[in-house]
Image (cartoon, rainbow, N blue to C red; front, side, top):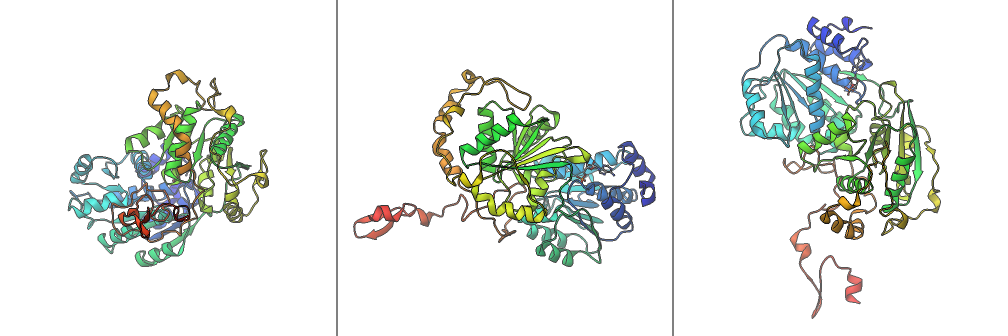
Amino acid sequence: MTFNELGLSEKVLQAVEASGYTTPTPIQAQAIPYALAGRDVLGIAQTGTGKTAAFTLPMLSRLEQGRARARMPRTLILEPTRELAAQVEESFARYGVNHKINVALLIGGVSFGDQETKIMRGADVLIATPGRLLDFAERGKLLLTAIEILVIDEADRMLDMGFIPDIERICKLVPFTRQTLFFSATMPPEITRLTETFLHNPVRIEVARAASTATTITQGLVASAPGPAKRETLRRLLRGAADFKNAIIFCNRKRDVALLHKSLQKHGFNAGALHGDLDQRARTASLDAFKSGEVALLVCSDVAARGLDIPDVSHVFNFDLPTHAEDYVHRIGRTGRAGKSGVAISIITKADQKYLAEIEKLIARKIDWLSGEALSELTDEGEAEAPHHERGSRRGGSSRGERPRADADVPQKSRRREKSEPQRQHVEERPAPEPQPRAAAPSRERGRHHADDDAPVVGMGDHVPMFMLRPVKLKPGKTVAADEDESTSVG
Ligand code: AMP
C-alpha cells in the first residue's frame, strides 16, 4: 500500500513524500480513508504507531476548503500534555508546508496574550490542553461552535490525569454534527463509556496492542534496596551500560524526579529533568538539551514523557517500576524506535514485586534478571545514608553523561543543602504508594489539576486541613498534636 491510494490531497502527498515516508503505517492505512470520508474513528493505538499523521494528514486535506473566522477555530485537537500538543503542532508544520493554514496552540504555562492574538486571527487548527481551552472558552475569547473536526488524543492518559469531566464539557461545547477522531492506547470502561456517548457510529481500528513491546528492546531487571542505595545502583548501571548514547530515566513522582536529578548532578552526571512542576520554558529547555545531545540523561515523570517522540534513545531506566503495567510498555517504548536497538532496565525493590508480576503478565513474558543482588537478600528499608565510599568520591568524566566533578565550584548554598539531605530523604523516599484507582474521583473543579499534575495523590496529598493540626485534648492537663504518635505521648 502507498500513500497515493489513501485519497489524500496532492499538497499533502507532496509533503509526505518530502518527509521521506513511503508506506503508511497500519493505523494510517486504516484510519485515513474513513477520516477523509467524514466518519468518526475510534483508533486504539499507542504512540509510535504513526497515529499523529493518521489524523493530521486527513485534516489537512479536508481543511483545503473553507476559511477560519476570528475566535472560531475549524478543528480542535485535545492533548493531555503541553509537550504532546507542541509535538502535534510540529506535525502540522511538517505536513502542512504546502498549505496556508493557521495553527494555534493553547497550552498552560505560557502567556495568554500571544495565544489570544492567534485565535483572534482565526485558527484553522487549534491544538489545546483541556484546562487552558476551557479557560479561553469560559472567558468568551473562544467559540467552539464552528468546529468541524474534533480530535481527542491519548484518551486513556486524559483519564489517568482526571481530565474526563473537562473532555465531556468540551464535547458538549462543539457542534453535534462535527466529526470526531478519538485515539487511546487502551480502552478501560470509562473510555468506552465516553466513546459511546460522544462518537457517532465510529469505525473501530485497533493496531499493535499496548501489551506488545518491541522486539528491538533488550529488557532487564536489577534488584536493589530502596533509598540512597537505589540511586547508587542507578549510577552503577549508568557507568556500566554498553553501547550507551543517552538515557531516559523514569521516576513515579515529580518530587522523586527532582531529587534524583539533583543527586545525579551532584555525582557529576550531565542530567536534565522533565516534570510537571517545572515551568514551560524549563521543560522545553530540558527536552531540547536532551534531543540535541547537550545532556545525555533525562530524568522524567510519566506524564511529562508520555508520547514524546525522541528518536535515538539508547537506554531507558525505570528508577521506579511503574505501578500501572501499561506505563511500563509506554516507558520502554521510548527506546528501540524505528527498528533501532535499545536497552530497558528496571530497578526492582522488594516492594515492587507485585507490580513486576503484573507487568510480566501484561507483556506475557518473564524479564531477565541481570547481575546484582538477589531480591530475597534485600531489605525493604531505605538506608539513611549513602554508602560511605560513594559520598563525593567520584571524579573524572565519561561519555555517559558524567561530568568531571568540581566540588570546589559547588556554591555554599548547595553545600548547606547537602548537609541536610538525609533528613529530607527520610521524608521523600517513602515506598511507592499503592496504585490509585484510575481516575479516582477526578476533580470537577478546573484549575485544581493541570496537564502535568502527575503525582499520584495519597490521602490528602500535601494539604493538611487546619482541624487536623489543632492540638487534641487527651486527658485533663495533657495534650498532643494530631500528627504526633499517640502511644509515645500518652505513655
Ligand atoms: P506517532 O505515533 O505519531 O508519535 O509517530 C511515531 C513516529 O513515526 C514519528 O517519528 C513519525 O514521524 C514516524 N512516522 C509517522 N508515519 C510514518 C510512516 N508512514 N513511515 C515511517 N515513519 C512514520
